[in-house]
Amino acid sequence: MPSRVLAALLTSGLGLAGLAVGAYWLGAHPHSAPPAPPPRQPTVVAPNPTGPTRASTVPAKSVCRAFAATWVAVDTRRDSSPQDARRRAATDLGTPALQDRLTRQPKRPPEQWAQWQQHVHIQPHPQPYIGTPPPADTAEQAFAAATVARTAVGPQTRAELAPVTVYCTLTRHQGQWRVDDVDTDLGEAPA
Image (cartoon, rainbow, N blue to C red; front, side, top):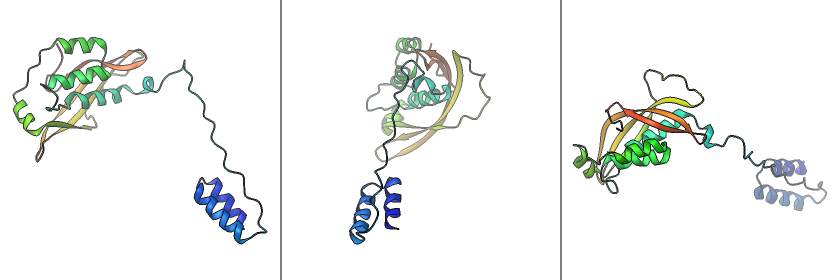
């Protein structure tokens, strides 16, 4: 019976705890069966370098959702306008064409910039998009939307802001979905 306990502990992956209990049982019962062999290590198969990568299998709507969260995540400690957050989103998840369009846009703080500076930064909260479904994806183009609730967070205050819906047009760029064009329900499309 003790050898079954030891074998069960070792094969269940309890490691050192299993060895300690097994040693106790073997010491207390010198006529026990020899311990079971240690569990085998799993075989690790290297990914196929010519096959799809993890990044290329990320769904377009997940890319849009991450893009939208970055698009609205303004941080007044480092940003001079919301345009900086939008440029970060384009740099991380946009095509070179979108990055270029955003670079050419002037930095104009919105009317509520003073309020945002008092609160320090905008914390995004991606929400499920509820609206008209976008057209079906093709091999090279996809349409997605993401709604992001926002909270202005300051040292001692929090203020809920109106949610923003971000509409993304995505294209394949080097095997990955990248945002090629964007618009919001606030009319914040790049020129």
